[in-house]
Each structure stands twice: as C-alpha cells, then as structure tokens.
Length: 156
Image (cartoon, rainbow, N blue to C red):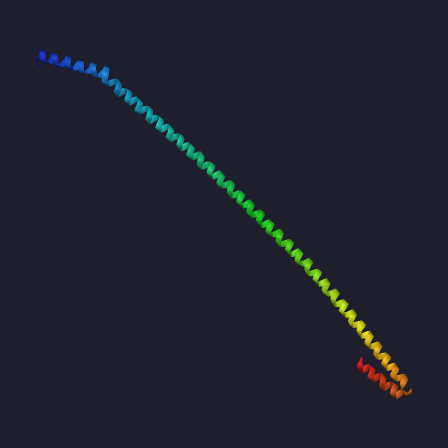
C-alpha cells in the first residue's frame, strides 16, 4: 500500500468528520439518550409507585369490606334481637289479654249463674207462696197435702 495524497486527504476528511460529530452531533445524541434514560427511570418509578398504591388500595378495600361485613353482621344480629323482643312482648301481651278476657268471661259466667240462682229463688219462692196459699185454701188433708207437695216438687 502506498502512502499518497489521497490517503492523507481521506484521513483529514475523516478526522474533520469525527471532530464535527464529537462537537456538534454527539452531545445532542448523548443528551437525548440521557433524557430518554431519565424518562424511562421515572416511568419505572411511577409504575412501582402505582403498584404500591394499588397494593395499598387493595388492602384498604379488603379492610373496608371486612368492616362492612362485620357491621352488616352486627346489624342483622340487632335486628334478630329486636324481632325476638317484639315477638316476646307480643306473646306476653297476648297472654295478658287472654287472661283478661278469661277473667271477664268468668265474671260474666259467675254473674249469670248468680242471676239464674236469684231467678230460681224467686220462682221457688213464688211457687212456695202459691203452694201455701192453695194449702191454706183447701182443707187440711194429709193425702191432698202430699199430692200438692208432689205437684210442687215436679214443677221445681
């Protein structure tokens, strides 16, 4: 290989090209690469933060769901207790009302029985008075007296 002017010219042109690239093109390329690296790193950090926030949100949601279920269970238990109390009170009220009605019915029966006794006494008294007046009007005869008493007993 001969060392001539063409080779020297090509080396000078290549050196100028390298100098031009190093001073004017390479800084822009490295700057763009560094900016891209920073954006990628920020994106990865943001993705990691988003994952952490998502995990936190999932944990919060699970805690809220657990709390809501506990509250729902507590509300249902209170509702059952209130329903049982209402049913027990209704039963007690029904027993009291039944006892009151039973006592009222027994009082009615007792008063009816008392009226029936009084009415019976009045009738027996009237019949006794009738019988006595018939006995007094007739002559005193033991057989007639016995027949009259038998007739009064049959009427009673």
